Image (cartoon, rainbow, N blue to C red; front, side, top):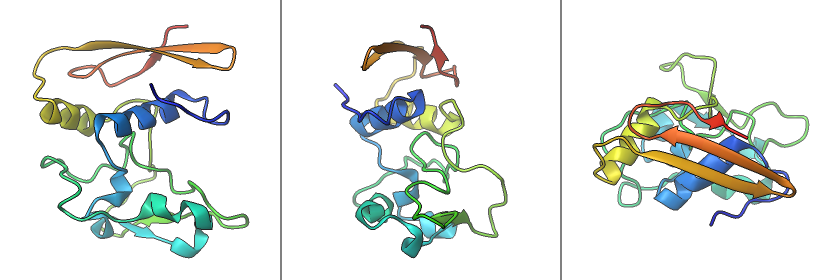
Length: 153
């Protein structure tokens, strides 16, 4: 069971929390993250700074996957930002691009890492039914070859 708060009634947040349940840390906590993003600690809401702590190699194994700005496990640039600030992290010059964080689907790297971690090399079809207040969100996805989440409600 994944428990989420009342302001978290979004498929992306549910998928992110399921990522934790599967054993994944935040992408921006990887040991190599400083090569890709700059964390602006003073812009982070103080009680949320732990969400951006970098882990060491003994804690995180990315299974050979490169840093993934679009992972379901990566926060957006403005996640937990202080009032009157615009971002808590930004891409380094080596890594141009406009997006950061979940893009409405599992990234190819999310899928590969899950398959590698669980040694799954077959099509797996999952249904997720989440009750949020009076709403039930049903999500269907395949780990091996489908990158999008579909609300089938």
